[in-house]
Image 1 (tube, rainbow, N blue to C red):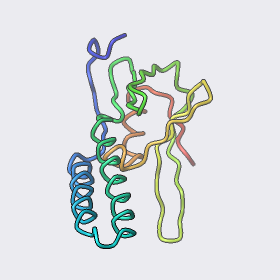
Image 2 (tube, one colour):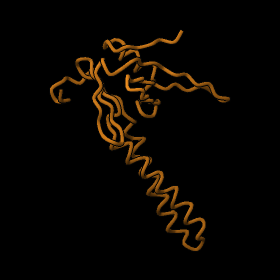
Image 3 (cartoon, rainbow, N blue to C red):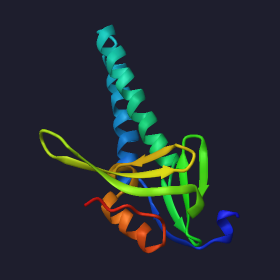
Length: 148
């Protein structure tokens, strides 16, 4: 089943301005690294930070959309290795994992597959609250487990 044969109901991705800002900040750090040529240690550390930001921004731009809900219901997940299409039979359950930290809490969307793989998405990956995405996936007919 080709993605082009199905209607896209909803797509979730890293916010475009955020991904572009990562690349821009990386380029600015590259200029700062070049400008600090008199201090080799600073040039190396700033250069490494520059490369990390540029790579993170480019990866966020390439993996768009990160998750797409199609007719069927079918999910299309973008990873570094490419796109993976998942039908209802591939998904064991979808849930939200809440983690409490000292400062606050965070939510992750967890897709548990029958082949013992986990797909985990945070707010940065989806561009909106993982809980809102889970509600949308449940309405589409995917197996969602709601935490009590």
